[in-house]
Length: 106
Length: 117
Image 1: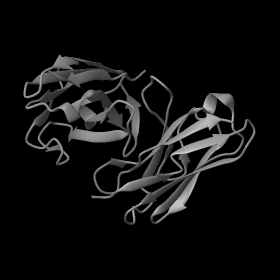
Image 2: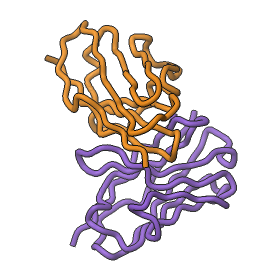
Image 3: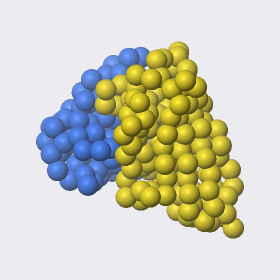
């Protein structure tokens, strides 16, 4: 089974900051990597699919990159509404999620 | 507009059974694989089961294999999750999801299952 590890588990940042979240797979997942945002009490929402494709309706301040085993979600300028937990998910072999990064305002 | 509405959650004793339903609308249900994904309180997400378009192929992780069964009724636009021999570790919010060729693009609001005596 492919394991997904996200870091950090908790991230504090200020409005306007550039924020980078990391996700590492236990083996090569060939860019089959998605990112989700989950706000408190809500279902997850798809942000980025296939490493770097922005889902319709998602602000352009969100972007994804990576290859092989290492992937990144970047928020170019943090907004208050971005406070949430972010999950990565691989779909190269079955479907596995990372443990999440909780993003809060400093 | 795609909508997924889960029902059937509740409090159940360990060892008992529960059946969840997810009614879909806003898309051609019979053309898409469907999924169940769960989230234990305060924890991460775990894929629980998948079913192909005609219901002929189903998939499960080891944590639920042999206890959970996914099925679908394309005439009723509904996917089900039959959960048997429930354990305390099955306590979670269960989400129904639809993919878009890979990512889980649409999710229901979830239904809470609590396994406790």
